[in-house]
Length: 166
Image (tube, rainbow, N blue to C red; front, side, top):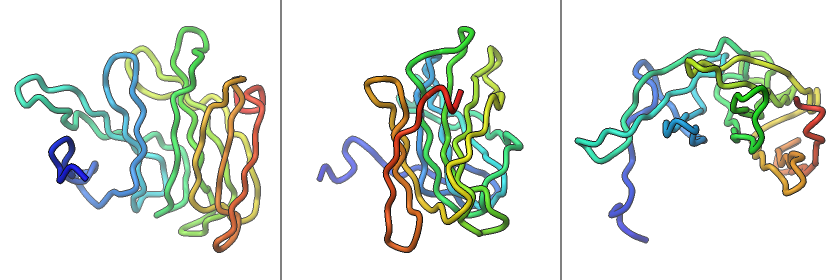
């Protein structure tokens, strides 16, 4: 344990409320896009940019994608290795059940537009049942591995063709 010599806890990613259980992707422009669990029912993210004076990443802006998710549920995000039409692709897994109902798992595919905003390209339905915490990973063949809670203390591992989520 390095006793915070190389890292430190930042403040919440949002200005108006709490955030936790974050997942981050490094964009080609050098910004770190941070997605997080919060009290909202749409996916928000905060971009962090490198500040040379502070020698650290600092929050730049918070953005509401308007894309639905379950309130208070962890999500997973990855930057896909291949672009589409020259645009970076971000995949996000999350529950989309009403309120805090951790059901209706999905994988969203977003493109990163030239202005940095995200455009929803596709929604892939994983299941209609329970969908708690999840973790996405790109496999060597380009397909997607997904690990998620499908019941209390029960985990499902599945692979999904990238063609199904694009």
